[in-house]
Amino acid sequence: MNNSKSISDLIIEYFKKHPNKDLSHGPVVDWVEEEYKKIYGRKPRDTWRAIRKLHQEGFLIKVKKGVYKYDPGYVSKKEFDDFTSELKRLILERDGYKCVICGRTEKEGYELHVDHILPKDKGGKATLENGQTLCSICNFRKKNYNQTESGKKMFIRLWETAKRLGDEKTLKFCEEILNTYEKYNINGHIEWKKDE
Image (cartoon, rainbow, N blue to C red; front, top):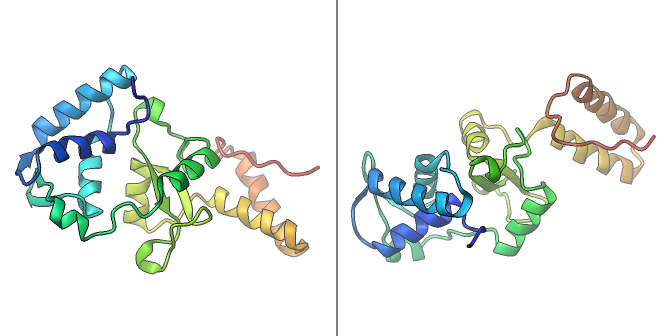
């Protein structure tokens, strides 16, 4: 049993088995959900959203509403997998295999994405520092609301940098904000360990 297949991996597998064919979402979703259930013992959420994401990334061509096509010639012209597999693994490990915003995991049936904090179209590179783990829902919100990452995660990184540089003013500023996150248990799944 291969537990490393994501919803997107299964969608790609299905479309690659049917190249250059206009495929409506029904049979694709049915097959992906059945295969996912064989691997994880439950149906995934977000299958349709993952298909749309693959279209947005240039892997699938939208023929019309609810119908997509995989054209190997078209995909080879686009850089599809900008984060290497190893870099994705490191980012997922660093983030504890959960969404840095809400804490959702693949075990709960959510698709996890390795996302650019600073988007590619704004000059963001595929680096460990510019990568973050988001569930498909938070990734969708990020794109719609132009969020770049969880505020708490951002302030933890800023706090760590200020500590390393000895910037007391920024350090105290970040501590105030992070203490407020802790006080109200906002993004409580993201742990901040302040040196006492």
